[in-house]
Length: 427
Image 1 (spheres, rainbow, N blue to C red):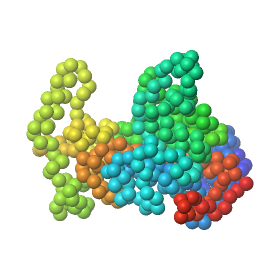
Image 2: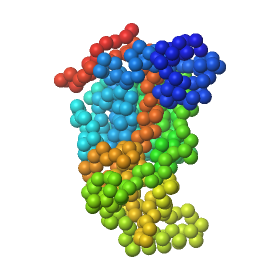
Image 3: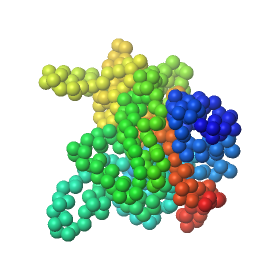
Image 4: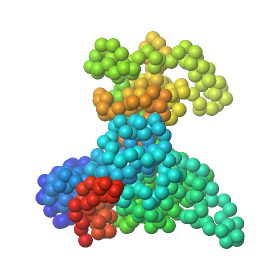
């Protein structure tokens, strides 16, 4: 209690400010102040750094940790970790259109690598954190007993073979980064009766990572119901507890109107999404009579059968279903009501805001691809504000893990041969 209060006072931080900086609830921070529970060492170290250097994500102008961005998509994970001062040193994404959007939105000092299955782990730079929103492919662990009887290899070297998770595992095995953050669909936990998730957990344990998981709904930050599982791990048991991350109640999140084009002239025209002096939504996003009739007939047919299939019709005061990569087909999961005419799809710019790539009223995220590709990209992306909150929460643990390894470096840059340079080293 005494050390926490001393550091807090030295840093000049209120209870509310500590809660905001660490992403613990105010109630949790009050318990630190009153000595009812003891803050973990990474939190005390973070307060010590703030007390010494002020509130900054960088030291001497140099970033404090590096990360690689695998299955990068359009950079949602990168945005989250750059927001707390991380430096991306390697990016991999196989889809050429996603690479186009990624390159348009980030300062790149390295080429975007393609198919990770064709890249040797030895060709990936050293890094402190591995980020991966990896696709979920079927994991097969059948036949292990048979392989035992035949004397064939199994376990880590075999049971993840042929899956994209295997590529994460082989990189972890070679580089042993301080921390990992993996993201996937909520159903990963129940896929193949839990066998898939068990393989992932067993593999991470075999690779000597202590990890915890949490399912987070982006609805706390965005007007969209989007549940995803996050797996955060470290090479040392730091007492990391994902449940301590303070997430606002989902019912307190913003409504759809916060991401919609106002269509009143307060927003500049952005072709092809909006047109005219008042920046009205382009009529092409309104459903044709043929498509709207089809969707209504389809929903009615399944309603009579007792199925839940149908379109999602929403208004400005609502929140949406999960935006998916198939949104380009008919927009059925999120259709916006319009007075006196058929509903419309969200524009790609509104999808960018719905995923948190653009803040409300901003158009800073470049969309250099067709509508079809943009819908696919945003539907496959991570919710940026969620990753930002996670990054802020786990940063002290990343730095503590680096310190445990005697590797609290300050990243300086990259040499001509692709190796990282650092200003200093502790330990």
